[in-house]
Amino acid sequence: MDDRVILRIGTKILIPFILQFALYVQFHGDYGPGGGFQAGVIFAAAFVLYSLVYGLGNAIRVLPHRAVYLCGALGVVLYVGVGFVTVGLGGNFLDYNVLAHDPAHGQHYGIMAVELGVLITVFGVMVAIFYAFTGRRRFDP
Image 1 (cartoon, one colour):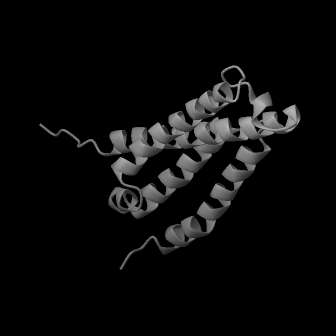
Image 2 (cartoon, rainbow, N blue to C red):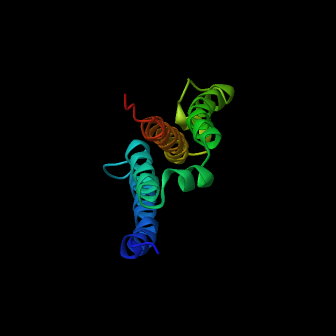
């Protein structure tokens, strides 16, 4: 019988609120403090909490190493892709004004897409670092 029932139930209750707060930070980032980096770290913190309570093996089954590395790369591709789209539309690299009919809307779309890329990259890198540190074996001579 597992003696950490309260901890597990508390974690199940807390994780959705942590993820919701990360989304708030992400989507509120162009209006106030916050954005992709902070939201990515908060997402990773929720995943680290899950891993600490339920074990590294369960966490790796939920999010395998390959998916973590893919997140790290996919965010960079999204970030750079937005830059190439702006160049393809006749603007400078990451000149968001060309993304919509109105420059203000283009700025909004561009910032949201770039910040989403930052969120995905930061989440993937933070979880990869966590896996790297927790996956190491202790050396007992």
